[in-house]
Length: 319
Ligand code: SF4
Image 1 (cartoon, rainbow, N blue to C red):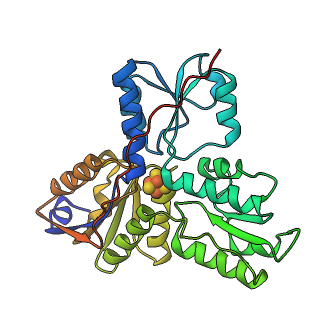
Image 2 (image 1 turned 30 degrees about the horizontal axis):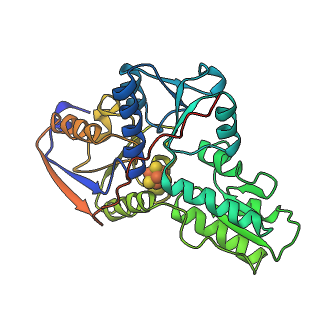
């Protein structure tokens, strides 16, 4: 590759919607609000959202990220992440006298409520998701004896349930639409009386970002997906492009951009996962602009208007 290769005129197609969703914005605002009100340190259980830039920025401002509640001093305030937690974690916090600020996304909380309801009516609940992901652990904790986690259609064949007439399913909010459709089809084939959630559990932000990528893929020589490697909705965007055989690169920010990827690319599509800050997109577009003349075009499939209000704090338990 020569400098001349890289200096060719390029079009940058910005897939829209991209970047922060309402649940991520709310969760970050909740940590910032605690830092403003109380000052450092503010304890946060797990990464507030799955993005290294967000976590590092908040850490610099005084947030202390811990893996488990045991690391939080008694009597402190602790923020629970956007991915949600199991009821046992709430109980543990109460027992420890911690004041909880629960930043669970309302759309994750909706899935928790469905899990409780389905379990109460005696269903075996198939939770479609990735084992070990924090959101899956939290949802599973709502009804651990009634729930089983499945991530592929092949696993459906091996499922053992108490009553094939009483099976329902839920999904992690950040899955690929295609992968869920395959698993649901396998469940329906095996359990014809399968009961569905009242509305799609894959959230609006995940769906919109996938549709936006779909809309630019055919035109793009290369797709750049901005986000961290532990971000589920971000990884699904990468997989979508890979399934179509496209040239795709996952980057955490502008510093990861390798000019060699763009050597022969006249059209570069750019998107960002729901936990990646918008300023990273600006930085990546600027970095592409440094390689040669660039025209930036926005490609929007839908305008997002969803906003979540900030909740109050849980009262400090007596004693
Ligand atoms: Fe909520 Fe969806 Fe954002 Fe997750 S990706 S925080 S479920 S809006």
